[in-house]
Length: 164
Image (cartoon, rainbow, N blue to C red; front, side, top):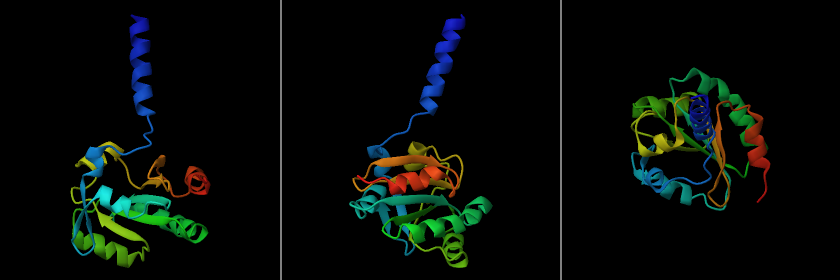
C-alpha cells in the first residue's frame, strides 16, 4: 500500500513540475482582443514577434500585486529594449482594462483575454491560477520561462539574457 501511495505522490508532483516549451494548438487558437476591439488568435499575435524575445505579463487593472510589480517591469523594459513586452489583461471589463493601461502608464503591446483568468483554452494551458504571472518566449517561439509570479524573479532576467 505504501508503494502505491508513493507512486501516486510522485505522479502528482511530476505533473505539477511540468514546464512546457511549446504552446498547444488549442491554446494558440484561443481568441484575444486588441485595445480597439479587433480579435486575434494567440498564434497570430505571437507570430508577429517571431525573431524577437517576448515577455508576457498577465495582469489586471484590479490586481494590486500586478500594479506593485510595474516598477520592476519598467526596469526590465529599460534593461532589455529589444524585448517585446506583451501585456495580457484578464480584466472582464474592457473599460477597466483600457483605463488601467492609461492610469498606470503601461508601455508595451496590449491585449485582453475576454473570459478572464478562469476560462479559455489559453489560460487552461498556462494554468493561470494567480496573477501577476510572467512568461518568456524566445526568438523561435519556444517557452523558455513558463512561470514566474514576481517581476523581480531572477529567472525572468536569466531567460531574457539567454542567447539562442
